[in-house]
Image (cartoon, rainbow, N blue to C red; front, side):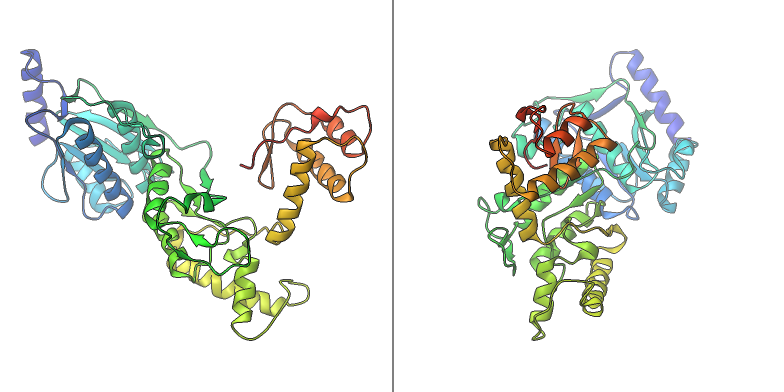
Length: 396
């Protein structure tokens, strides 16, 4: 009855030219955002982002409350208290969302704006979709320095957005070469690794901005850094910044079960042993480190962690191979190159058999339409294939 009275009042006022269907902020007032206390932290953070964005655009800051009534109602269907609230405010509104993965519906009902998601990420993504489309906020605003356009009033006659389940269940970023993020902010801490880069941990505030940009872009997975040692508090802090945003966390391609070669060596060095990182020669020792590290990941990243089972090779081997591929890119071979380049070419050809365009190969992207035969012949040094067929772009 309360919602019906609200809708009747809006129809009357709109007919007389006094009010649009929904007003988020004006020079004299701002809306109240209702987020039930049972909602996950990531939804509360997204609601606070909405309040901050409105303030940047209009100078008015909507209040965010967890009880009472609100002009904006944010609810998640898999949260019982939120589902009951939604059914009370707008019966049947979330019927098509139940049981789906990251689906959402954003729509005005009377003078209220309802943002509902099938799960917490669906709710969060629905809110960010509204922010981007109706408020004009760039998801990468912090990194692009693109401030939203200032406006005196935020009001619309009709708001209607919806999304079903995404085509790709997991969509995310791998923050690689993160040493480039450590020179313009105070270090987040030290890392104990035998490597020429990555000695400093990214500042926690920087990771906070990265995680915000990730979810604003409607992505749900991240590898927050290379060689993360979950037992090192500054590195654990990076993981926590991502987990609180509701996204899944995975590991670098040299970290099966959350263990890099550096973590393995440090673990046994602290116990007075110098061991090879090899499952063939040290199976019990490798399993011990795997078990301990993955238990820590499971505890500290909760259900958000996604295990990496594959492994490329140690960082030194990867560095040698990348240097080789860089040499091939800079000066295509007129004469035979070392065997490592031939192995690289043959492995690349196998990848190209599976997908001709946009191939991901151990951190390198092969761009353009390159035929399988062309790459194979070039890998074998046949002059029929011109050198320009080595098409490598920068690391992904």
